[in-house]
Length: 191
Image: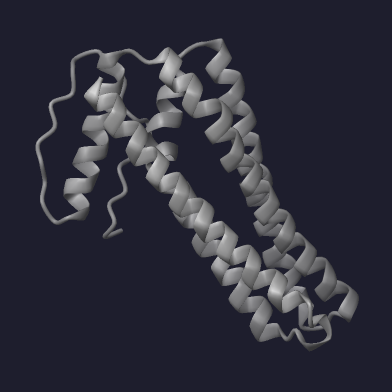
C-alpha cells in the first residue's frame, strides 16, 4: 500500500502544481484583458507562448504518461472516462491550433479579432481546468478503486525511475512481468 500512497502523493503534488500554473496563467491573461484597447501583438504572442508552454507541461505530467495509459487497460468504466479526458485534451489542442492560425492573421485584424483571440485563450484555460477537475474528481478515485497493489507498484516504479532520471541518477527499476507499462515513451526533464 506504500507504493499506492507514494503514487497518489506524487500525483496530488503534480496536480497542485498544474492547477497553480493554470491559475497564474488565467490571472495574467485576465489582468491584461481589462485594458483590452491597449493589448498589442507582443502581448498576444507572449500569452500564446505561455499557453503553449503550459500545454507542453500538461502533456508531460506523470498522470498523463503513466496513470492514464494504465487506466486505458483497466476496463470499460475507465475507458469511457479516459476517452472523455482525451476529448478535453483534443479540444484544448484544437483551440491552441486555431489560436495559432488567428494570431498569424491578427496582424491585419481589427479589435474584434483580438477580442476573439483573447476569448479563445480563456476558453483553452477553461477547458484544461475542466480536465484537471475531472481527473481529480473521477480518474484518481477510480484508479484507487481499480488498481491492485501490484499495479500501484508498477506505477510507483515508473515515477521513481523518472525522478531518478530527472535528478541525473538512474535507478534500475524492476517491473513485474505481465504488469502494464506506459505506451508512451518516458520523457525526462532534460528533453
